[in-house]
Length: 465
Image 1 (tube, rainbow, N blue to C red):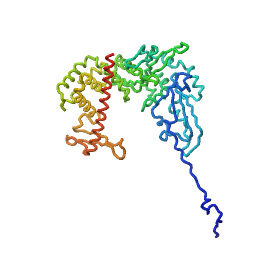
Image 2 (cartoon, helix red, strand yellow):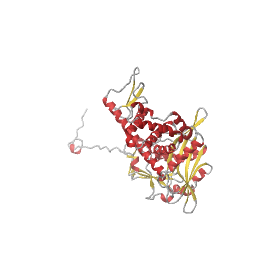
Image 3 (cartoon, rainbow, N blue to C red):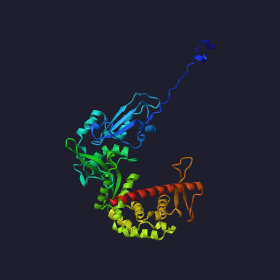
Image 4 (cartoon, rainbow, N blue to C red):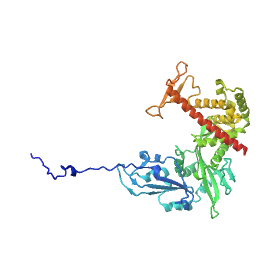
């Protein structure tokens, strides 16, 4: 059996001439947030205009797999226009080149369809035509709807922000229920997904959903009257035994170009009036964001300030707080509104107990004049309530407690549950853990105090107008 010999000139035996095997760098991709821009437009002329309203949506990465990264493109740029007239959308997708860099090539169109669905128009010309062919879409939707509220906005709203100072604007609220809800809401879903953090589309097949539309009538350059959707709210009605119903606000959105003009507040006020006039059990809001809860508290505090049935109870609590200064520990938990006041507020104003208790704190703050003199008392009250909400109403007594405790494994998902034995109080022995709990509670108290002060200042300013 012979062996193979290589000559001295063989490239394999010559180190200087050995072949080098190279590996191309794996495609790192690009985040959706870095290559997608979304504009809100109200006319064909707004498309491609530098003055178009640029949308600032929530994290776009969540709509794409692989941690929100798009693979296989160089120089990728995606520009999306969303029409406020028909709620159709068009996406312009451009890139320098496309190739599989080891992670495949992302199907961008498929990902966009998951957001926009049937509202996404394939051709730009077809999208531009919708501004004329569907210019009366909103009017056709509300033509058979129930009119709930009409308001002429001339000048400034109670939010102290002007509502289109240039000219009066007629604003109406319409209610849609039943089958038409699905036809309209299907076009609104993309905006809900993009602008409402953590939202999911409602079940349009459930007849208990209602859509409240805030619509403005304006004339275009040809003096043709157009209906423009400024915002909407999705409300769910569910049965409460034995024979009542409850209203729960599931979603509310004011279109970005019309935000901070008082329209959201107006829509909430209309919902309050509906709840009262139709004598539902109460009106609640599903997981309100901080900005929504701020407006809601401002509205409800103003309503409660002129609600006579609670004034005597409120004055009594404030009087006792002033008399018992400095506050004893035994009295901290006695500042809460009496059950009779809670029930009166629910029956008449349709404000639920949890919301009323937050309003009650602000009402006390407004009555404790001068507030600086009684700030120590007030902070003790707020601290007790926050602790009761987070740890438990009787955090020093028997019962189970759950405390978040940071660990090396996962600082956001670790906790300790403990239970007192034989009626004795339980506590976490580790000083570091206890310190962390107190620190987190204090942050919550500071946040609540800041919210209370802001709302009190806002309400006081409105009452002086």
